[in-house]
Every structure is written in C-alpha cells, then in structure tokens.
Length: 213
Ligand SMILES: Cc1ncc(COP(=O)(O)OP(=O)(O)O)c(N)n1
Ligand SMILES: Cc1nc(C(=O)O)sc1CCOP(=O)(O)O
Ligand SMILES: [Mg+2]
Image (cartoon, rainbow, N blue to C red; front, top):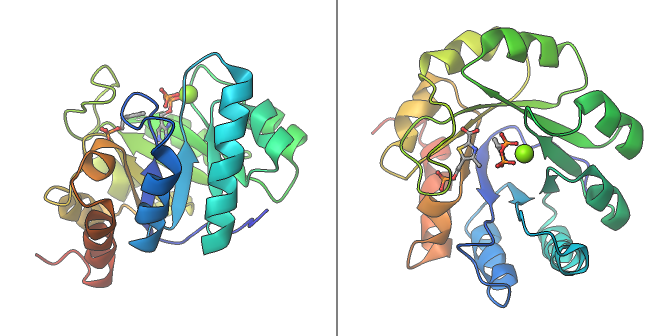
C-alpha cells in the first residue's frame, strides 16, 4: 500500500465504458505521467475475475508512480489486491465497515453530493476525504444530484480534503479550485481527450498557479 492521501491535485477516475480493457493501463499511465496524484478504478461490470485482473494491473502502475489506487464500491476487491483505499457512495458499504476490512492505513472516500450535514457526520467518522458534486453536466453520470460550488467553501471547516466531481474540464476546474476544492476528480474531461498526459498536466498546472486564470 502507498497509504498516502494527497493534499491536492488531479484525481483520475477510470470508466469501463469509456476505456477499453486493452487501453486502460496505458491511459492511466499517461494520466500519472501528466501528474495525477490519485487514481480510482471504477468498473460496474459483474465479472469479478476480469475486474480483479484489471485492478491488479492498475495497482502496479500506480505503485510505479508512488500514487494511491482507490477502488470504487468494492471493499472486498480493494482488500484482495491490497489497494490503497475505497470510494463509497450512499448505496455502498459504510465507511466503518470498510475501515474494519481494510485497516487504519486505508484511504476511505465518501460521496456527499451537496449535503453538508452528511459531510459533517462523515468527517467525524471513518472518512479520509469528502467528495462533492455533481458540479456540471456529466457525460458519465448525468443522473448524479447536482451541487453548488458554495458547498466546497462551507466544508472547509471540516478539516478533510474536499474532492470535486462531475463534468469537470480544464476550463471549468479553476472555479472549483478557487471555491476550495483540494482534489479535482475527472473521467471524461481527462480520458476522452486526445492527449491524456497533456490534459493531466494542464489540470495539475491549475493547482500550481492557484487557478488564477
Ligand atoms: C471521487 C468520487 N466522488 C464521487 C463518486 C461517486 O460515488 P457513488 O455515488 O457511489 O457513485 P458511483 O461512482 O459508484 O456510480 C466517485 N465514484 N468518486
Ligand atoms: C461517478 C460520478 N459521481 C458523481 C457525483 O456527483 O457523485 S459525478 C460522476 C461522474 C464523473 O465523471 P465525469 O468527470 O465524466 O463527469
Ligand atoms: Mg458507488
């Protein structure tokens, strides 16, 4: 396990509908080369063996770059492969169950959408980061509840890294960074671009410049 929650930067999330299995590792390597500080393996398909094989390859790639790999939804898979953590939504296992399964060093992320009360409860529980969104129309999950950027500032007092997600591109990310996002989580705005490494570098640069433009 890398066991290190990054303070800020690009959080690259895979999607099995966007990235074919024979391209996913290369695409993630490009994101890491461009500066992605954390990667999430997100794959809703039911084939456990296939998912385990892909997750192991992604973990090896992340370890080469010294970056954490987070598994979406599936605590058992995260445990099997020794991933760095899990991301859990409202319909997934609880963070407390995940902590029990994965141990004290695991990174546990939770979805909060626009709900500051939920964020407050999670911050005093087992969560290591709080994810808010969807901030913009999303090609991946248009049905996710929408959120206003104000919630990012309001969640600042909770003391955990704030992740922003949903329809984020290099054009609209600066407004979320200025509003208080510590990490920017991206699927389409990264992995559907022509040059993934260059796009990842552009996202990364936004943090270096304080998203002033
Ligand atoms: C960083 C991050 N934030 C939010 C989500 C969404 O999680 P969830 O609501 O469980 O939805 P699915 O991704 O499982 O469809 C996420 N995965 N990552
Ligand atoms: C998986 C997911 N969860 C969201 C939430 O708001 O909870 S938005 C989202 C999709 C993120 O993909 P894209 O960068 O392509 O919009
Ligand atoms: Mg989920």
